[in-house]
Length: 107
Image (cartoon, rainbow, N blue to C red):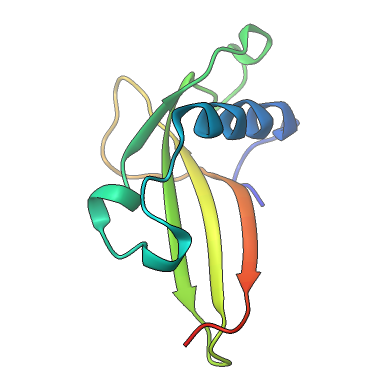
């Protein structure tokens, strides 16, 4: 899922996931993503020249790792990337969901 992108985000997703893997993020485990410093504000930089003219594209992304406890006791785990711009105002209006996974058997 993405917001506002009118271009194919798949190469961007793959480049971000590859860089996340290379940087060995997140440093917290999926079962313990309570530490804000571990799950938020992970700056990831990629280089895709063919996307440099696309609206909302940037080489620098804020990658966040989140878990949400569900009513059935499972955990919804997702990785979301937000583009960062030089004129950043602190408000994200666009994002790319890189990964979503339901983890069963959680308390």
